[in-house]
Amino acid sequence: MPIIQVDGSQMAPSILPADIPELSDDECLARLARAVEAHDSARLDEVAALISRLAVTIE
Image 1 (cartoon, rainbow, N blue to C red):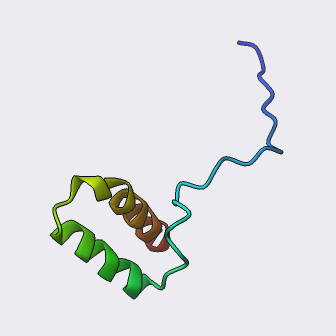
Image 2: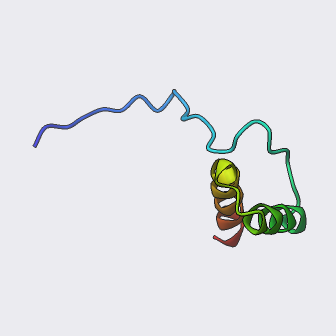
């Protein structure tokens, strides 16, 4: 199997949208609860970003 070199100098883009500011864990959880409660499919990206933000905290 050939060895593949990867250029690690290029950073991957952030998974968090620019419109989600730095939030405390409590603020993030409250915003997630409001987004889920609204049942608005247009907010799925925000919900995913908030869940991933909380998942990083849990790890």
